[in-house]
Structure formats: structure tokens, C-alpha cells
Image (cartoon, rainbow, N blue to C red; front, side, top):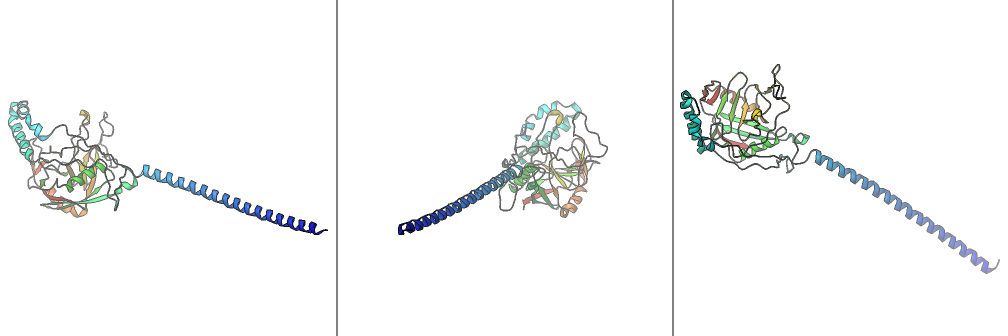
Length: 327
């Protein structure tokens, strides 16, 4: 073997070693690249799963409660404009009563109050957030404390936004704006099936409103009255039990006349289980601490209205809301 042959052999060995090293480095680079691609793919899939989960949660639980506030068909002031016509339409023997009733309505006009419409997108008070929640989601369980300070004692109420987020938000908004301050609870009932204290009308006539009506949010979890018959022409119209302590929105709905969404500022507090059609949005309940005060108020003699019904009318001793405070 010549020196040239030896040199050639060594050179071949070096080249072969170099090629092996380069091949090993290339394979390592390919392995790392494949590993990186797999990692990126996994992270991409995880990101898509997380994004899809966030979207699902947002669509399912977090959204906007879109409340539709409407204008009342009439106002107390407009009603009394037809005073003479209304009186003259009555039978002669009823005209004196009708005149007295219209005078009572007229006396309430100067007491009427207007309030700005609540937000159409109703926020629920989660600490530190301004998120909105959809009706029926588990996030809609938020509650807000509200206290009615009356001349007869305190009535602490817990507003529950789950079943009627628009109406409970409306009550909260009105209380914060002072709408209820200095107003009398204008109606007390003690009939066999209806035992409530009704408040929220500054005019004291039962016809006052804040200048807007709230949407219907009928309760779905109240127990039907056993043995009661529903109107066959109106499915779901059978009476249900509004339990003691429930706070609900009063309205003048009439399904037969197609009148709906007539709630607003007026609410009633049930002092003994009562039977009503499931048409009155439940916005909360009276706390146990206020039950004694409500029971004492319920014993107040009633001044019947012009209809002569002894079981319904103004409390003989006024029940005045001095202030309504939220929080």
C-alpha cells in the first residue's frame, strides 16, 4: 500500500465519519422538528377545545337579559280627562259613587311619579363584575338585599334575580332612585284566597305607574292548587299557591282582552298562602326578620273601596314606606 493509498483511506474514513455525524444531526433535527410539530398540534387542539368551551359557557350561561320596557296604554291623568263621560255612562243610582271615585283618582294625579326606564341589559350583581346572565342558568341565582323602612317597622326583602331578572332589576332600580320613598301601601286584602299587602303606587289609587311597563315573567315553580279547575280555553290558567313571604309584581293583565306586560312599580307581599293564577312575576321574598311586622300590618282594619268589598281596601292605619334601600 502506498502512502497515497493510506492517505486516501484516512480521507475516506473522515468523510464517512462526517457523513454519519451529519446524518445523525439531521435525524436529530428531524426528530426535534417532529416533536415540535406534535407539540404545536396538541397545543392547537387544546386551544381550540378551550375556545370552544369558553364559547359554549358564554352562550349557555353568560349573555344579556334583554328586557323590553313598554309604554302604558293610558295614564291616571288621561283617565280623569274622561271624568264626565265616565260618570254619565253609569246608571243614575251609581253616578254619585262614580263621581267620588273619579275625585279620588284626580287627587292622586299630583302624586304621580315618573322614573327612568331601567337598563335593557340587566346586570346581576356578581362581586367585582358587570356580567349579565341569562334566565334559567345556574349563574342567575344572585340575590340582592332590600329593606323597606316603614312607619310600622322594617320589611327586609331579598330580591332573587333567578325567576324574574327584568322585574327584580326594575324594583332594584326604582328603590335606588327613591321612587318608593314616602309612599303608602294602598291595598290590604284578607279574603279566603288572597292575603297580601300591596305597595308601590305613589298615587295611592292602584293605577299609578312609573311611566313604563315591565315584561311578563310568569313563575314556573309554584304548586297548582289541588282540585282547582283551569279555564279550558286558557291552558295553564289554573290557580297556584303563592306562599307566605313571596314578593311579586302586581299587574292588570287580561288574557281574554289580550292585555299583557302591564307590570311596573307595584308589588305585593303575601302574608299567608294565597291562590292566584300564575301571572305575577316573583321577584323575591320577605326575610324572616320582617314576618312579625307584616303579621302586625295584616291585622289592620280595612277601609273598603267603592266596590264595597270588605276584604280589600286601604289599611285604616296607613302603612308608609319611609325609605327603600338596596344593599
